[in-house]
Every structure is written in structure tokens, then in C-alpha cells.
Image 1 (tube, rainbow, N blue to C red):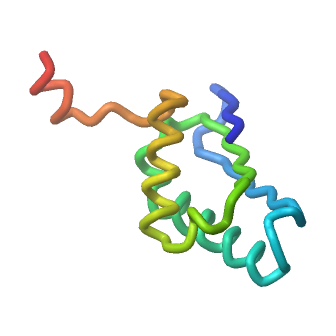
Image 2 (cartoon, rainbow, N blue to C red):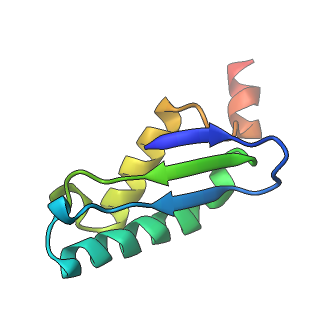
Length: 93
């Protein structure tokens, strides 16, 4: 996953790049669909002005939408591009 900041933008942009090394066309297309759905459903949790490029390496780990969402949120957390929720700020402070 590659992340870029674009402060001039007022939205989250993303791209999915899948190599032929991942598998057949059916596997590649399913992986892209799952990644797009996970990004679409979690877009509001990511900081505005972020550009994300995803390039999966293993399709077996990305077999369900739930698994893809967990992997995506873990990566976004590591990249520090998740929005801070107001409830978390109140409990921490």
C-alpha cells in the first residue's frame, strides 16, 4: 500500500493495481472488487486529502469482504491516515 497526502483535494482517492502474478483473471477481478468495496464502505474513516494505491500480494488472505476490511483498516492505522473519533479523544483525555 502506498499513501500520499494531497492537501488541495477534498476527498479520498484510491486505486487498485493487481499483477498477473496474483492468479487468473477471475481471481484478480474478484480481489479488485473486494478491495474496492472495502474502500468504499470505509472511505469516511480515512482522512480527507489522502491518495491510496493498493497492490495486493496474496489473494488467499483476501477471500471475504470482512477479511479485506480488517486488512485495510490495519494498514490504514499503521499509515496513520485514519480519522480520530471524538469518543476516543474524550476517553483518552
